[in-house]
Each structure stands twice: as C-alpha cells, then as structure tokens.
Amino acid sequence: MKKILILKNDRVGDFFNSIKGINSIINEHKNYETTIVLSNYSKELSFLFDFKNIKIEILNFDLNYRDKLYISKKVIFEKFEKVFILAPKNFYFYLPLISKSKFFAICIKEKNKIRPFKFLIKKLHLYAINDRSFKKFGESIENLIEKISNKNNINYPNILNNNPKISNLLNYNLIHLKKFVHVHYKHSLFKKNGWKLNDFVDLLLKISSKGYQVILTSDFCNSYYNDFFLKKFSFINFETNSKFVDDSSIIYLHNITISDLFKVIDLSNQVLAPHGTMTVMASYLKKKVIDIYDITVRINSFREYKPTNKNYSFLILKNNTEKIKKKIINFL
Image (cartoon, rainbow, N blue to C red; front, side):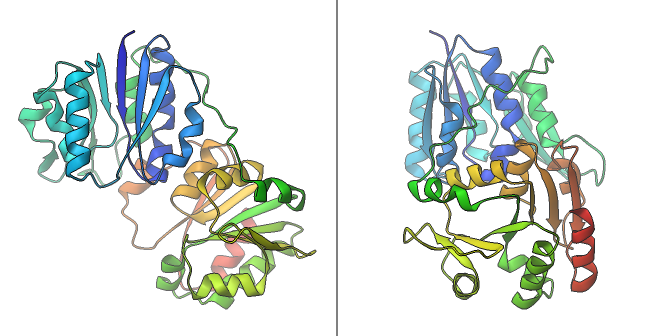
C-alpha cells in the first residue's frame, strides 16, 4: 500500500486551522496508509482520525534531537510517496535532501526573509507562501493549505470523527449543561488590558442575566484565579475528579482535558474566548463565536487565522470594561 506523511505537530489552535486541508488530504488518499504527526499539545485530538488506514504519531512541539533523528529515519526508510509539511518548522524543509518523496509545504515570507531558504524551496514538489509582508492582503492559512492539498479543488465532505471518548466525570455531569455560553478566561490577556477579576465576574453575571447558563474554563494551571473560580462558582474539577454543582447559572470546569473540552464546545450554544484554541475549535464545529483579540494584535492575524464561520464576530479587548461588556452582550 502506498503511504503519505502529514507533519502537523503544532499547537491546538494552529492545528484546527489546518483541519480542512488535512480532511482534503485524507479524502484524496483514501487508499493510502496515512501517518499524521501531532504534537504533545494536540495528541488528545487523535480521535478525529479514527480510521483503519491512519496512524498517529507524537513529536514534541519544539523538536529535540531525538525527534529530528526519528523523523529523518522515517522519511528515509518508509518511502512515503508524499510528505505534507503543514507545520513550517525549519528542520522539516531539509528532509527533501535525504528523501525521494514528493514534498508539499507551507512557506513563510516576512519582509525580505523567506522560510525556508530559496535553494530548499526548489526541492519542494508544490508549495504555497504565507506572505506576511502584506499588512492586510493575502490568503488565510486554511486557504493556503487547501492549495497544496486539494489538487481537484473539490469541496470534500468532512469525514473526520467528531465523537471523542469523554471522561466519566464529564459524562456523569452532562445533565447539568443546558442552554449555555462557553466563556474562557485567559489571565494574561485580561490583566494586560486592565481587567480585574471582578470586572470579568460581572461580565459572567450579565451573560447569565440574559437567560444563559455560563460554562467557564480558564488557563490550564493552578493559580490564584483558578482558586478564586473554584471558591466563587459551582465547579467540576477534572484534576481531582471532584465536583460541587448546585443550581448556579455559572459552572467552572477546572483543568478540563482537550477531548472533554471538544465535547463541551460541541454542546455549547456559543463560545466567547480569546483568539486561539477555543474560538478556532468552535468555528470548526460551526458554533457562534465571539473572538477576543488583544489590542496589540498584528493586522495579518485577521486574514491568516480568521475562521470561515458565518456566525463569527470579533472584538478588540480594551480597558474600557463597561463598553466592552455592553458590546459582548449585544453579540449574544
């Protein structure tokens, strides 16, 4: 059986920006044995590729010496017909020098620099360039990946598996999740823009006053704001496998796993979160999204990472908390 390799050991948000392209690759190579390389961050999403002819392997997001040696041996000895470089790490662009496979890749241009070097680009069978020297113009990452993965330009149906195996803790508590808005708190972003915890809590109360249940998540860690949420609200603690859920309209999910998070977003009515994993995942699942950007966001980000979602809205977070709260409520 012929074989292909997809290199996508990236962060979860970047991974979901490539989902459409990966789906196209799988559709066009149904009779191939496909190996997909995920990262230590995205490995819990392997359930999406639950097919007999697909193998999942895990490398570090930041490739170490062993990772580089392993992937080098793999492309030499396994004789893949095609290799798709969807995570544009510098090391991957040297692989065509040691392999006879056809390489397809996303390249990066910034000002007068291009990654990889031009002599390495010549070794690629097909490539697309993400040109960051343009401030506003250019194509999204999703469209660029489609260019190198979908030779027939077909709008393939999504064949990926959207049914993760969830934890018993979440399964037993699904009864508590009703018509809800999933809100994610990223401490560094809100603090940087002048928001205090009480400002954020007031936002949650305003959302719940509109008749929504609020399901809250936060950065995966143990910090004072996590402790604050655990004491302030009903909670389901995925770290200690414990819970305290009453009739509160706000439930905090502490240190939820990626697969459980995927299920929660899938059940949500809409998602309000800083741009990244939550909003990109929600757009993949066709949810209504309110995407929060930092005021220092690069203009390029709006075209590189904006999801193709008809129910998508975004706002720039500022320290005028009352004005931003009103804007968010109007989006609901």
